[in-house]
Amino acid sequence: MTPTPPASPPPGVAPGLRRTLVLVGIMGAGKSSVGQVLAERLGVPFTDSDHEIEAAAGMSVQEIFQRFGEPYFRAGETRVVDRLLSGSPRILATGGGAFIQAPTRAVIREKGVSLWLRAGLDVVFERIKGKPGRPLLAGADPRGALARLMAVRDPIYAEADIVVDSLGGEGHQAAADRILAHLAARDATLAPVARLLKEKDEQ
Ligand code: S3P
Image (cartoon, rainbow, N blue to C red; front, side, top):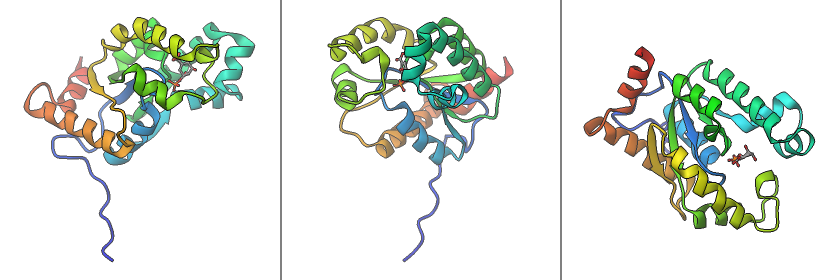
């Protein structure tokens, strides 16, 4: 059997990044799963900011919310995102509230390139319903809570540098390929991602 060649980025997408590509968007949009595939394809490390926060705190996100409250979690989130963005370029998946917080958004703007994985309510609710561990959806009406969060947050996510839809029924590999194709297409149309990363770097 012929060995499968390593996955490589499509033409037009730089093999590697000058800046960290930060995935933002609502819970269930697929930031972590798709981010891991993107990182593999681009040959760069992947980090999930929630996992970093949990490692630093020695407890789960849910436990941090329960014991110390959301403002404490958000302060830690800003510090962790800032630290990660000061390190080597990578794919960084953030928790759904990170980009909504002005200080965290400012750090992402300054040091990274943001990509909103935009998803509809039905798609995200289908993915996350019945799964524990999300304190903001812990009440009696998680779908309503999600809808209210999205109504407030979507206009802020829309401030991201790049917007790509997260489609229902699509696997992570396919979504990552579509995102890479979208990034590559910017080469011919809008600013290419490589140039966007470089321009931000030179500012
Ligand atoms: C949150 C999303 C979660 C986690 C925390 C708060 C939010 O991350 O950071 O529960 O405010 O939307 P995911 O988006 O990875 O679920």
